[in-house]
Image 1 (cartoon, helix red, strand yellow):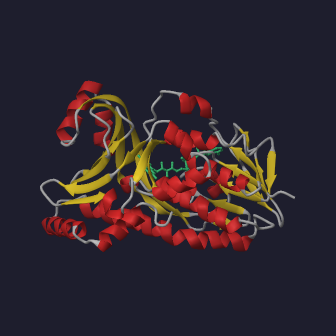
Image 2 (cartoon, rainbow, N blue to C red):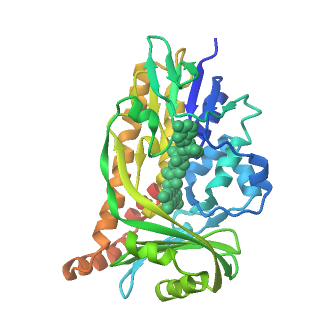
Image 3 (cartoon, rainbow, N blue to C red):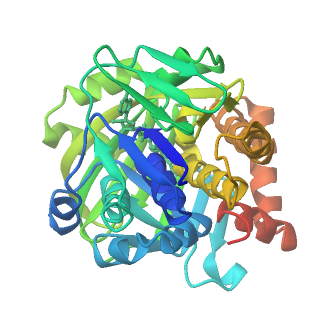
Amino acid sequence: MKNNVLIVGGGMVGAAAAVELARQGCQVTIIENNPIEASAILGGDQVDIRVSAINRFSEALLDKLGAMPLIRASRHAPYHQLEAYEQNSEHLLFDKDEVSASHLGHLVENNIIQAALWAQFEAHMINVVKVSDAPIAVEQHLSSIELVYPEQRFSADLLIAADGGRSQLRSLSGIGVTGWQYQQHCMGILIKLDAPQQVKTWQEFKPTGPIAFLPMQAPYANLIWYHHSSELKRLQGLSKAELKEAVLEHFFELPGDFEIEHSAVFPLARQHANQYSIGRLVLVGDAAHTINPLAGQGVNLGFKDVAALGGCLLGCDDVGELARLHQYEKMRRKDNLLMMSMMDACYFGFSNELKPLKSLRSLALKLANNAGPLKREVLKHAMGGSF
Ligand SMILES: Cc1cc2nc3c(=O)[nH]c(=O)nc-3n(C[C@H](O)[C@H](O)[C@H](O)COP(=O)(O)OP(=O)(O)OC[C@H]3O[C@@H](n4cnc5c(N)ncnc54)[C@H](O)[C@@H]3O)c2cc1C
C-alpha cells in the first residue's frame, strides 16, 4: 500500500517536499492556509517583494522536481559575482570564473519558486486542502499519526511540519527552540531600475548594519536595509520620493536611476528546533531553523532538508520509521547549525565600529580575497556544495 504523507504548509519548502515524496510514490496531501493559483503567478506581472538567492544545489533540486524550467521561463536573474565590502576598506569578490561555472545562482521571487512547485501538484496527484481553523492536537499512534482540528482530523503515516518559523505543529508536539530575536529588523525595497540587466549582487557592511543589492530580472532589483526597528519604522512612514532620497544617501553604488515600487519590513530571528522529529512528525525548512538572511541561505537550507529527507525515506516500507527520521536529523542538524553560526559571526563581527575589529576585518577581507583554493572552497560551500 502507498505511504500516506500529510504536509502542513505549502510554502517553498513544503511544496518541494510534497513533489519529492510524491515522485517516490507516496500519496501526499498538503494543508495550506493560503492556497495559490500557480498559473496566475507564473503568467502574471505582479512582482513579489520577497526574493531568494537560489544556489546551485537548490537549482539542481528544482530541476529534478520539474520546477526550474518554469522558473527559467518566468522572471529570474542569474548572478555571476558576489561582493562583500566595508566602505574605505578591502573588497571580497567571488566570481563565477573562479569555479568555472556559468553562474553562481539565481535571484528569484519567492512566489515564482512556490508557484513553479505547485504547478507540479496535478501531475503527481497531490491534494491541497485549506483548513480555516488552527490545529489543536497532534496524536501519535504506533503505526500512524493524526492531526486534529476542532471539526475534523487527518491521519497519515508521516506528518511533515513545513509551516514556517512560527510552526504551530512544532509547539503542539512539544518541541522547543533555542534562539533569539536580533535587535535589528530589515527592510526590503523593490525598485524599478533604469539600467541594463545586472549580474552582480553586493553587500556593504555599515556600523548601523548591512545593506545589500539583489539584482532581479530587469528592470527590477531589491534593496535590503538592516537597521533598528525604530529607524525602519520612520523610513516606512516616508513618501516614495522621501524614501528614494534616504536610499540615495546610503546606497552609493546603484547602477542607475530608479523608482521605488514597494517596501516591507521583516523581523530577524535566529531559531533552531531542539529536535527535528518526534514520533511520526518531522520538521523541515523554517519550522526547523530560521537563520539571519544575511547571505540568503534560509530556503537553500530548507531545500537541503527536503533532499536529505527524500534520500532517507527512499524505498522504505514505512515513511514514519523512527530510525529514518533520526538519520535525517543527523544529516541536517550540523550543517544548519554551521551556517547559522557563520552568518552570526559575519553579522556581529561587522556591525560595530571598534577600531581593532575594523583593522582585523580589513585584514580578513584582504586575506580571503587572495586565498586562492580556500576562497574557492568557501564559494563552493555558498553555492550549496555538491550538486
Ligand atoms: C528579508 C528576508 C530575506 C530572505 N532572503 C533569502 C534568500 O535570499 N535566500 C534564501 O535562501 N532565503 C532567504 N530568506 C529566508 C526564506 O524566505 C525562508 O527560509 C523560507 O521562506 C522558508 O520557507 P518555508 O517554506 O520553510 O516557510 P514559509 O515560507 O514560512 O512557508 C510556510 C507556509 O506554511 C503556511 N502555514 C503556516 N501555518 C499554517 C497552518 N497552521 N496551516 C496551514 N498552512 C500554514 C503558510 O501560509 C506558508 O505558506 C529570507 C528571509 C527574509 C525574512
